[in-house]
Structures are given as structure tokens and as C-alpha cells.
Image (spheres, rainbow, N blue to C red):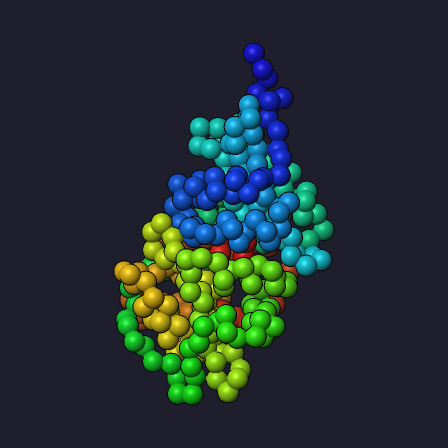
Length: 286
């Protein structure tokens, strides 16, 4: 009989494996976007690891590199019937080794946060997923227009995104706003960006992320306009509590909390524009 430990190997994931990871994430209640995999994989093709037992995928972790000194960890999963047997830990160790020397971020579910702390992560803020149907036809502030983000010069979008994320991620952002099954809107005033929001199709409520805005009024207009592009109008936003205005706005829009994570880092908490940060982009890649 084969030795289970010897029959376990960790390899880089294929593009087909990314579809499997999306299904696993759905089973965990994370509600990933239907076309997220097509964006995730090209961002760092070597950044997705699969553990196979007897050739069958049973564990996973994503360890995506951004820039020279940042990394983001996600998709840390073990099939339920094999948990507690060390396969997940071996996959975790292989993944974190790929990010050695980088400040690593992740969005951890409550059940795993103590384990992450033991691995050197510390909580920097919490995210609450708010879901519901926002009011329609919320107007933008005077002088501010909502336009298709794909019509905005990309360099301008990338520079704006950099205010809210600790490393350049131009390739990811370009794919994120143009992938199928999503709408990206930018708020513009006098040629300057005042906000950015992207909504994408999911198995359950459509997810909005990122959501950046110069004010609660801009954020509200973006959420309302993005929801209006959906057949049902039901959305979900992962709201960071480092921006109290974002938490208040979620309640004012009639959204209710349904799911919690914590943003954790191994190194210093990155300096970002907290006041304009209304919704994180994704749990898996930051």
C-alpha cells in the first residue's frame, strides 16, 4: 500500500486547476467571482500551488508576488476529509517559502486567524462583507460624472489604485476591469479621478471591489450605479473598518453584514489612503 505522505506532492497549479480552486472557495462560502480565475492566473502563473494525494488535488494556496517586496496569500484550503493530517501545513510551508523576504498580506477567516498569528501574521484591520440591494439612482456630487473606467487612461487608473494597494499591480488591474461578466465605473471631476468601482458576477450576490472614493457621496453613487447594471441589484462589498465612513455608508445603503475576515501582514502595515478605501478588491489577491 502506498505511503500517504510519500504519495503527496505539491506542484504549481495549471490554469484548469484554478477552476477547481474557485469551486472549493465557493464551497467555503467565499462567493468568488465567476471569471476571477482568468484574471488571477496570469497575474503570477507560478503563484498558485496545489497539493496532490495520489494524483488528486486536495490542498491549495496562492502566493502571488507583487513588485519587489510584497506578496499576497490566499486560497489556503484543504479538502474537509483530510484536514488535521498535515497536508495543509506542508502546502502552507511551500507557499510561504515562495514569498520569503516579502511583506505578506492575507485576508483571514476567523477560524484560521490564530494559526496565522502563530505563523507571524498580525491583524491590521477587519473587513466585514455587507450585502443587500442599495437604493437606486443615487446622484453623484455636483460636477462629478460616472464613466466607463475602460475609457480612462490606464496610467491614471493604475496611479489611483496605487494609493490603496501597497505595490504596483498594473497587469492585474488591467485584466480586472476588462474581464467578462463585470462592469467598471470611474468617478471623474475636472479630469481627476474621484472614485473607482468594479462589480463582477458571482454565484450569489455580485461582488463590488475595489471600491475607492473621495467621499461617501461618491462611493454611494458608484454602488448605486453598479447595482443598477445587475438583473437583481443585489451586491456584496467587503468593507474595511479602517475607514469608519465606509462602515457607516454600508448601513445607510441598507446593506447588512454577513461575513468577516481580517487583513493581516507579516511586516509593517502598509501606508494607504484609508479615507478613500471603501471596499477591498478580492480576498484571494488583495
